[in-house]
Length: 72
Image 1 (cartoon, rainbow, N blue to C red):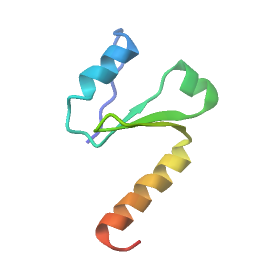
Image 2 (image 1 turned 180 degrees about the vertical axis):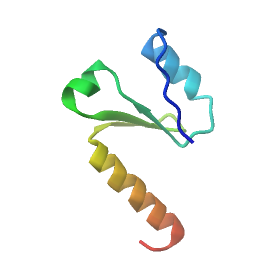
Image 3 (image 1 turned 180 degrees about the horizontal axis):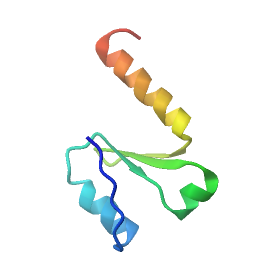
């Protein structure tokens, strides 16, 4: 499940609001990320994984899925 929130609220408020959800990752794309062609990633537990390219995020997620399914 994913959602896109394009409201006028401050980004920190949106992050806090959605950290209460049971989503495994939050991907934040603000002005800085757009300019750098990156995404900012946080885990459900609130751990900030920092900024990374979409390709790096895709590799990380695929590796995680493979590890969980035993095909790594």
